[in-house]
Length: 152
Image (cartoon, rainbow, N blue to C red; front, side, top):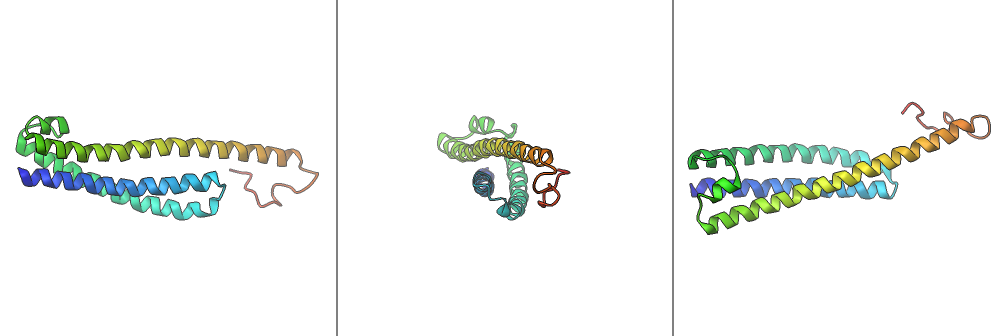
């Protein structure tokens, strides 16, 4: 049973590490949007896809480790259920690991919310710019001549 617990804690820590990488990339993306530097976004999106795939694998492994421990303990795969059957010291380690994982998940959620808001602001400003370019159609540079995608 102790080996299964150690495996679960290790898998939770590995998942936290993979999610921390996602958080780092999202923060870089947020900074790129803040600085209006979209040229770095395609590379960040590729890194984000790779990190997301790794995080999904880590989640699958953590879930499997939790199920294995739950099966051995005869309970559902939750920290609360595990802790009700574990000595205090082992419960504290499991809770600390799960808490660290939850902390990163919440940070990703917050960062994603901010990114969505920033993206919406950029879309809104882009639409205003396109509208102004369309209205000035005959006087100055046409939207097509400016290299702007007016179909977006």
